[in-house]
Length: 519
Image (cartoon, rainbow, N blue to C red; front, side):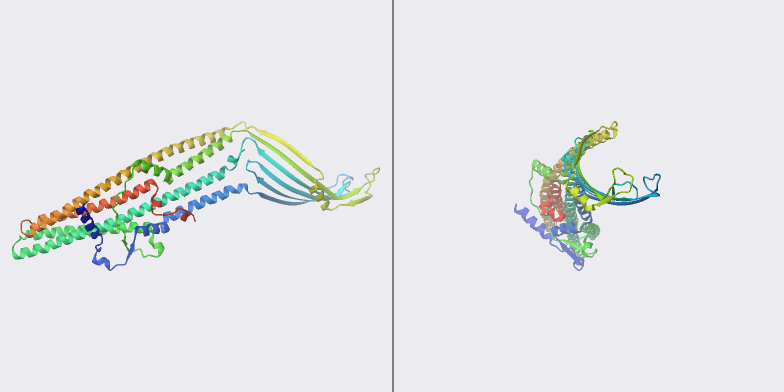
């Protein structure tokens, strides 16, 4: 245990070694993993696009609710007609009539699917036609009308169908946003730890190069004094050249991983130069995380946003089935109305014995008198009725119902498929966490053995009982062991990140609140 602790201290010390003397003078940006995640949440273009979807869905709810807003209809028309007179009873020459009409109606959809309306309309006519008892004439009517479907389109759920679906769509888009945020968080972790891995792998190779260079210098001095053959210089130079080539490859890998992290963070959105060098401030931790498969599956089933979205999609399909089935019913509707008319104008008085003679007098009533009759309910009228409409051809309605049932069945199968995929993903993630932790322990032990073996071989070389060939060989083995240990630690941290993503908890693990993105 003490040896393992010492090895871990040496490994962490290796992480603090400077990248290279040349890179110390370059412009750098030190970022922790937390910093990178926050920058990605703020600047990532994919996240910015996905944030707009819940906003659009919220607008969709407002649009669906508009059907319950009252509607106001206003109309006015005026007509002036002139016709030839074909009878002395109408007029001596021509018949001219001026008629103006106006109407105002307020209608409201009620939760049961019916409609209620209040209409106020009126007219004014003025004509040259003879034998008019009232001219000009003012007429007004106040009407209350109610229509309620009793079978098709009846009920609270059907009337609010668009609103229910719009709300489910909002929840679906929010879950999709959560999924994108979780995936982005994982992408940041993956890119960040890959960058750390490539940087530290480069440091290991630089250390290996320094060891080879030191051995080359020792070999040169030994050849000069005649204690070593000239060929040993060639083997050492070959090792130096090979490790320099490894460094070039490692440097390219660092730049590739750095560019990928920059793309995810979209650092140029903050005015940060694109050619800046990112220096990770965090180091991979090695804390054993024990979690059972059952616990991980329960967490995933309760938190996975894609699973929640699929369930909400099933609710929408169920609503569509209910609606399609309802449309197969006959259209039975109840209608009722109540109206109060009013009439006024200039009333002419005729001699009852000589009705075709000009009027003997008149009594004038203004338009307000018609309004008084209307709003005073001087003349009450009402009507009620039931209408039954049975379509003889309902092929299209039945086709819609069949389509809705198939869509529901498909959504249920998609739910089962999603659950199976989640089970497989979680199971694989749990196994990877356990396996990678054990790999770290094994590679750590291998690295400690490689260190002791190299130290022992160097001591043998100092006293002349070993050759540079074996020293170079054990240096290569140490480099390989260090690289494997580093890769195992990175793999362990990435497997933890994959497990958190599979369980749907990597946002809460970083204290990222979804409400921050809704506001």
